[in-house]
Image (cartoon, rainbow, N blue to C red; front, side, top):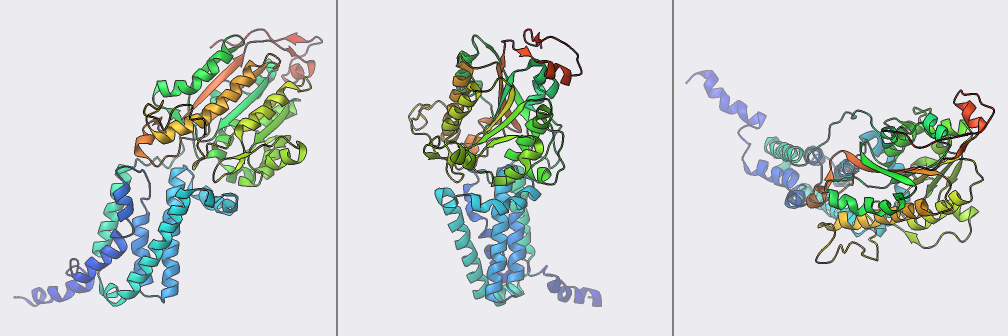
Length: 475
């Protein structure tokens, strides 16, 4: 045997190759690669929880923690668990990483205690952190000797399985699309019609894959559309979470509240309409601090806001009971009544009325009337969460139908659109929606309304008479 051949066995252990399957390496793999992921692996057949990076994070955290004092090791595992929860939330709500990081400052606006799911998740991570800290302290010497190769291989394998099983979306933004754009709703076309425009962005309303399930909502608008409206519907792409939908529909751009706060999104529709004499009014059942809307709504051109605190201060007695779960605020149904009254008592000046709903935010509080029989033997949608969410959305649609059907309503076009795909943990529930799409419904008012000289001139036209707008557009 040559000298080189004699030295190979001595060299291999220092690289951990011969220790790959020994007791210490197996212990490290169990503690750092199996334990933090075993619950998610057991839930994987039924629950969709995207956490591709997390398995590797725990291994790295453990390799660092075994060389540190126990209290600092505890903090290292706490950071790893926080990163795990962070990525689960970011992927669930389709929030870019930077946007999710920035959103941490709004955690105080979330009523965590209102959700058993959030409480349970928090308890799980606390137990996991304590268990990892205890096991690394108890087995410190063995874990320091162990080769990390086996643990790393298992963690990477779990990450690979997660990536292939859970259908991650492309990092790049899709080609831009919006419900406003698909219906040719620009400042020019809106001013030309001289109608009010009611824009309703519905929290968490994705695009139903089953037409019969979609009809549970669209059917509620059919009666309102019979005499005065043409009802159109379709789907649109989305990017990001709720503030991404606001950028999409109000400003015709991909972005989030981070881009608004930086002043990177300009020339938004409310500002264009305000410059042409339109009223621009917003309604939201939550407070103005959430995502700093009080700071950037005026920048996009919204002149009048109706957040929770605005209504509480300016409209005494109009707030009934509160609704929602972790995002607690007014009931959307009560806010719909306020919007209806505002539309009816408008001073004759056309306006953009923007309603952002709240109560269907996940985790949600189910409705009490069980209108779709969601907990019965024959539910309208054979999956509990989509069925209960559809019940909440249907209440918004009922309010829209009531607005559209009011005989005293001035000419008003209405666009209802989802903000982002429905965030769901259940694999069965997830299959009820189209990926990467949201539904929209457009009620185009067929009544004419006089167009004022000011509005005509804002389009670059000159006239000395008031001109009636005749008919709707052809498509």
